[in-house]
Amino acid sequence: MPKGSVNIEVFKDRLRLAWSWEGKRFWLYLALPDSIVNRKAASIKARTIELDMTSGNFDPSLAKYKPQKQESISVSDLFHQFIEYKRRKIEPCYFR
Image 1 (spheres, rainbow, N blue to C red):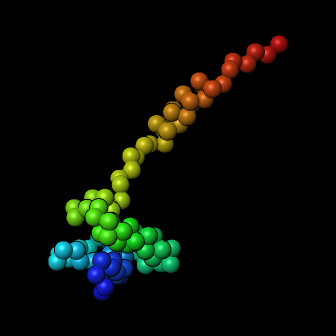
Image 2 (cartoon, rainbow, N blue to C red):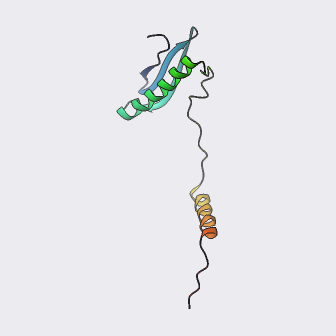
């Protein structure tokens, strides 16, 4: 593996990235099944890490590279937000 190179590996049927930086080994588990589309996504993440190592912006905690948790919302709450949004946008209609 060339210096500063991030490899895409398959481990337990899932993709992970592996590399060394300043003499330490790193792995980032992507939890994505091995497929063409997921390999492209892994490749983009790998290039980001490589660029950060080259530019001195590498985050050894890996927090920068892990997927961000998305806020979950119930269907009911989403519908109520939609109703409130529409209520502000729609003018009253009067029938004659």
